[in-house]
Image 1 (cartoon, rainbow, N blue to C red):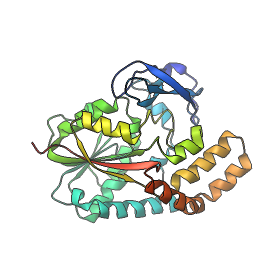
Image 2 (image 1 turned 90 degrees about the vertical axis):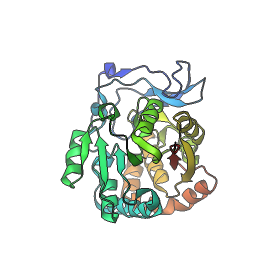
Image 3 (image 1 turned 30 degrees about the vertical axis):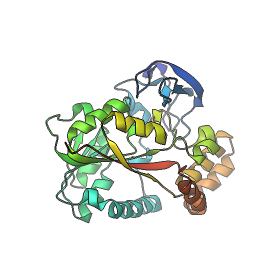
Image 4 (image 1 turned 180 degrees about the vertical axis):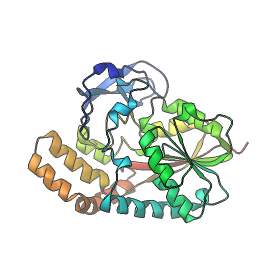
Length: 309
């Protein structure tokens, strides 16, 4: 576990959607998973547009200090990796009309390239990734994938002919999500599609677990979207949302129990919950299904179209 002791790594920010600097405090969040923060940081809501975000946030160029080597998306193994690949294959089948050849696919924030590899295995080799973490890029390239190291700011603006752009739990990591969506719109061909997965701050789990909700994950997650603010952000970038799907598995509940035990100092309970993690996911799935039926699950998937002309 890495601990940053330098508060100069953080800086106050304004709203990442509307740009207003008029925050209303909501509470304090700590990095419960990796301990990279020297102290809790504040969750606020913009008084103008009701977008929730963290302030302060990591300064440009310091982001890597808050992504430790054991960061999950770069280090999945064993049954967790197997279950994730199984879930991704199922989702690829559901989304195949947006992913099938000859479509050109770009995944922004592709991590180690797992999703792109599975799309390629399903039958579309026209996949490409963009990822800022150098080690994750090397792992993705070892899979034989074309992955560019960098961010949207580094991406070639002349390459504007993608059919589908994927944002798999990326928007909540970005300092300026509204600007990013506008930039993404320029990379899509007319009629192209964005598919975005992200945590839902309006979920039952967020309400129940409070600061222990896994969707906060400060400071890596800089903002907290709700279905309302997601719709507003995509619309402002010129997209039309055609689908809002609420995931139904119990992952967020299993993690919430573990983080809640950590907050309260229940070390033995936390160790037990860690050993039972996969069982807890299965046991909590009925709650996840119910939350999805009421459109209050903790993880949502958005499909948005760029106008054809």
